[in-house]
Image (cartoon, rainbow, N blue to C red; front, side, top):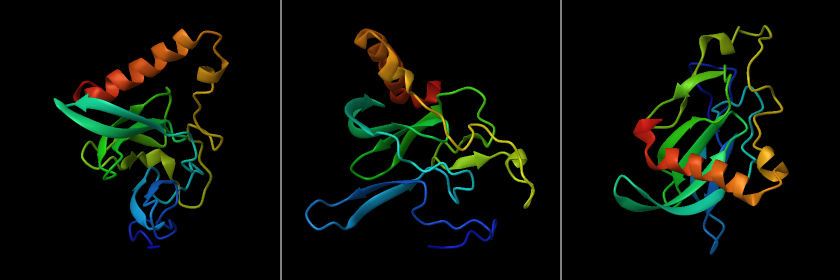
Length: 158
């Protein structure tokens, strides 16, 4: 683990990360940190979806996650490279956006007040796509997922 010198109170490392390990030996292949420092308890425990998509005219093996931090991520599942990301819930206040090259959240100035409490969204319970499990029709769930994948295929349009 390392200490972020810009935020000495923030411990970084593998907190709030998506990890890939080699099945043959258990060694870490790559990791992608969705909330560096994880000051808001946005651990990345939501289900991961694998897909083979054509992005930018080339086939990509991707992994996708609707993360607790309010952003939907698309990563190359072989390398961990950030492909695209966008909010999937309204009202995200802890970060204004994701860096388009690295996927690192651009934290809002209102997300910190030294050691004083601040209200951020999503709350520590996190953003959810639970409605996908609650819909009566699998067609309705498929429509939502197709829209998320459509946005993932054309990150410049998001």
